[in-house]
Every structure is written in structure tokens, then in C-alpha cells.
Amino acid sequence: MGGGDNPMKDLHVEVDDGIRDFGRKYRLAAWWVEPEGYAAINLEVKRGIQEGADLPYVEFESREMLEDFLRPFVRLAERLGIKNDEAAALTGELKATKHHLEDMRLLAKVKK
Image (cartoon, rainbow, N blue to C red):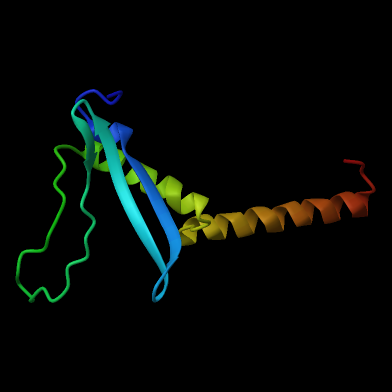
């Protein structure tokens, strides 16, 4: 395994979006490869948990492992076109700036 002692360095996430019996369903898998075979994180949804009860969790040994775990999810979200509010606002500002500069070039009759 390329990640050394940190299996999260080699974490893969994948979405399988297929049509099922009752409409469109999305399945998310998170895994890495170990010498003995695959290791996967159970991302099962638990319902009916009473207030005050312990919530299911995934435990990480370090902040680095947590970040390495989250990074593939960020890349997957980007591939799916999902942006956080800050990134979406920045994209809008960059587009507005580009159009403003194009307008200024036309007014000044400057070639690109």
C-alpha cells in the first residue's frame, strides 16, 4: 500500500448511479487496498436513534488521516459539479471580472 501507515492516503470513493426498481438510487463506496485484500468504510445510514444515544462514528487516529479521508470526497463532489457556497461565489466573481475586462478592451479598442 502506497500510503505507509496511513491507509487514508490510498482511499478511493466512487458513486454508482443506476436505475433501480423504485427510481434512481446512488450508492457510495469508500475503500483502499491492503495486503490481505480490500478494506472498506461502512457508510450505512442508521435511523431511529434516540436523542442522547451514542451516534455511530468513524474514528481517525490523526488529523492527517481525517483530511486524507475527506480529500477524495471533495474530488468526487467536484467531479459531480458540487461546489460549496464560497467556491460558487468565487466562480461568479471571476466570470464577472472576465466580462468586465472584455468590455474594457472593447471600449479601449485593445486587441487580445
